[in-house]
Amino acid sequence: MTSTTPHTQDLPPEGGFPSIRYKRNVPKKGPSGLTLVLGITAISAYGFYSELERENMWSRIHLVPLLQAEQDRDTYRREQAAIKREAEIMKDVPGWKPGEKVYHTKRYIPTSIWVIPEKD
Amino acid sequence: MSSPDSIAQTPFIDPTPLPSDIPPVDEVGATSAPLKSAAFFIGAYCKEFNEDFMLCKNENNDPAHCLKEGRKVTRCATDIIRKLREHCEKEFETHWRCLDDRNQEYFRCRPLEREFNTCVWNSLKLEKVIPGTPQGQEPIHLKTKPVFKAS
Image 1 (tube, each protein chain N blue to C red):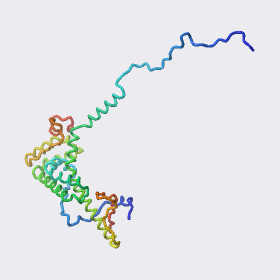
Image 2: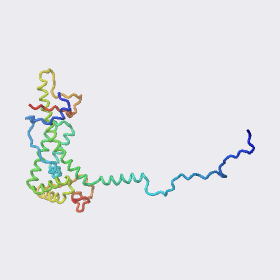
Image 3: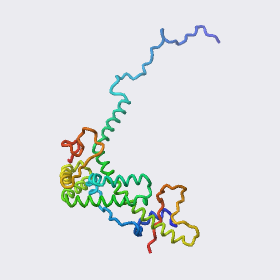
Image 4: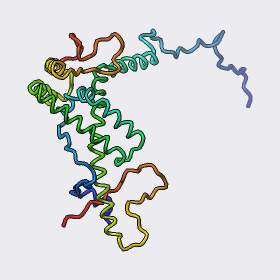
């Protein structure tokens, strides 16, 4: 079957379609994101800085030796008591050294698990 | 042998006293507010002992290593607290009670602190100095118009 009229194709208008307007048409307003982030950081940093903070830190620094000394005496007392108990418990094991380090170092390793004496 | 779990249930109490070869020393026994009130005077009065102790601790962290230096620190702190109470009992007490009531913030007790500092300076010649205050800037505790003050 043949048609008598020639084909007419749907074609773009002369000179092509106009471009599609897809961009937001809003005027630029306010500072950029980076400026905001940096600005807020600067304001926060200024807020954290205070001579009051320095005063507070130094009041604590002056007390550190005192509190540490007290704590050390207590730790030493507990360590010695634990070693004494260990010696008593292990007295029948030849060659046992009470309070011997389990680590191969001369550095002091704080006791991590304390065994508390049972109440009689 | 008990497991760590059962240890956590037991009070951390060991009544064994210090070995008798360690000279006894009375603990300071003050709570945090009096200590905070007296901190700068402890720092000024016991500077040498404190620094000696910290250098010793830096050398070796073992509690057994610095017991002697630690006793000196504690005796010195007890001494200065006793002196503060001897000379400025009223000022000391009102200041630390103020701190105790106000979250232990110095800036909320400045007028009482000023009285206390004056009293300590007049009787013991000890001054509150905050190390590291920027050159030429008024120390925060001496500011007449502070930004933060007791409300």
